[in-house]
Amino acid sequence: MPIEYYIFLCLTLFSIGVIGVLTRRNAIVVFMCIELMLNAVNLLLVAFSKMNYGAAQVMSPTTTAGIDAQIFVFFIMVVAAAEVSIGLAIIVMMYRNTHSIDINFLNRLKN
Amino acid sequence: MNTLEILFYALSAFAIISATMVLISKNPIHSVLWLILVFFAISGHYILLNAQFLAIVNIIVYAGAIMVLFLFVIMLMNVKKDKEPQKQLWVKLIGVIAGGSFLTLLIALVKQNTSFQGRDVLLKEGSIGLIHPLGQALFTDYVVPFEISSVLFLSAMVGAVIIGKK
Image (cartoon, each protein chain N blue to C red):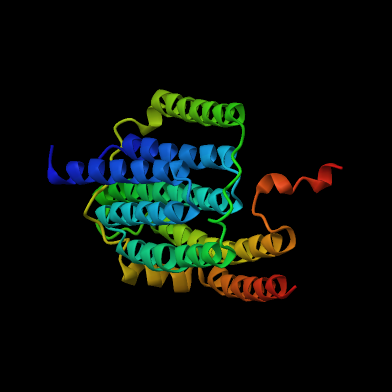
């Protein structure tokens, strides 16, 4: 499978996430779109890892080239899990204070 | 067109349609359910790339833990009752145009770039996605980031409790 197809797929998923962040007002949906962008990046990292592995495997069959990318994906998942717990705690706190999860409500810094 | 290509296209279409439905659906609970489907499609892609460890971790951590946390928070807040305020139509239109031009720009850049042409992704084969080589790399070369991430988890846990208690 050519690498370009994977790049196009991941770019499409990432752009859908960007459009979601720009167009929705519900804080939870915005947060979910950020998760979608993270996952698009993860998929692209794994695709590139297998591309480099396939190129290096021709030279030496026992190579572990490209394993770094999969470790990076693992760490991205770890950081995303921590980020989600904090982010949802912040959203719950915001809901408790304002009884709304509209992100347009958070413009008090402007005044 | 062989089986792998059919699987690739089917999983890609599934992922993109589900991702679009995340945006379109008005009810946030439906958004969460569609996003779980996106994660399953991406896990299918990982299995297609023979990254089996990441496929399982993706299902357990994302579809299992994180999305359940989202569902839990949504049901805790009972936000379905009061309708979500919508952005004005022109703001939505500008958002879609901005995202679409971002996508077209990046696709044009990738199409121009000659270093991606003729490079193939190795599907179905290769052992680097299995648990044994990944674990070996994780506990030899990457053991310091691994330990640091445990500190990150501890601080995230403490932070979540402190923010939630206020």
